[in-house]
Amino acid sequence: MPAIHFWGLILSLLLVLFLPFLIHKIEQNLEIFLFLMGCFTVTLTGSWNLHLVKEGFVEPISITVTVLIAGLVFRFFRQRIRKEIFSLEKQLGYPLFAFLLVTILGLCSSVITAIIAALVLTEVISGLRLDRRSEILLVVLACFAIGLGAALTPVGEPLSTIVVAKLRGEPYHASFTFLLKLLGAYVVPTIVITGLIAGFVHTRAVRKEESLQTDTAETISSIFVRSLKVYLFVMGLVFLGQGFRPMIDTYVSHLPWQVLYWVNSLSAVVDNATLTAAEISPDMTVFQIRSALIALLLSGIGLIPGNIPNIISANKLGISAKEWAKWGVPLALLSMLIYFVILTGLSN
Image (cartoon, rainbow, N blue to C red; front, top):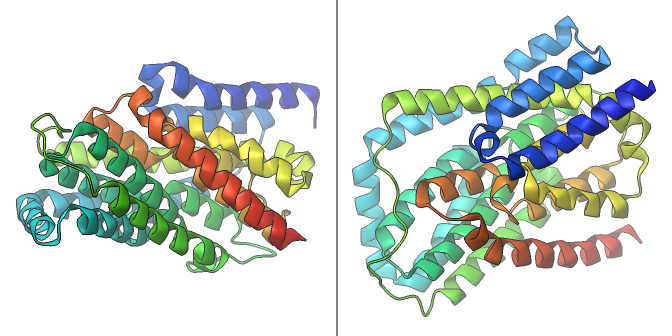
């Protein structure tokens, strides 16, 4: 790989990793920023071709349509959904309700998408009227579960869409159920355990007037705009993956899985789909792919820019970066340490 390509890609990676964290405007327009960076990296490496352009236009369609339809349905039935959920919360009590909320949203996010699951979460939280500390912790735990569950199908979130797209050919022939088979045994128990933690820590939650609030109901136009941003986001990630392909094939795919696992803790400062697009390759072994994806999914909860549900929930509920990091960073580090021990045992 020419030196100009190598250093250009290094610069691009640093920009993608840190600008969303350092510049608020870029964080707010992450989808457009990543689309532009994807175009830049493909141009830098001279990787444009008809197949890539077609892939860029086709791959985002499924997740975009899902987001659009679910968003419209949710808007029109918003009040009815909230009424039923709040009635259920009163019947069950906080601890059981918190467990079911986190677990069900986590498990369903692979079908309704991480974005819609996050929107449902924000509506539920805004009506609970718990103390602010309890609500923020519940949001962080729920986003953790949503981010994990959404990775089980290619319509759940951009990360899973990109993985299936990149592994569709030889030797994996990734289909709709590929990620469920690859990660299901790890993700599903973690979601349930996260739900149990949410129920346990909310046994002492109390009602307060000063709690998290959502903004007003979304308009039709805002739903279409968000869907368009998702489309550009996934397209940009497809382009990023192709642009970084020469570097990944030369260096990253040959790293020991232990090194790649901890390198992926960078997912805390940028949406984990970006790193997925940059590093997942058909040349990697199943164990490399699995361990890399687990690290990305776990570390993504650390900070607000780390995952789409984090960004949506924090924005709509007014959670600051410092408030999020108080719970997100310890959760990410602890879960990564636990799974590193598990994966080390399995690799021996």
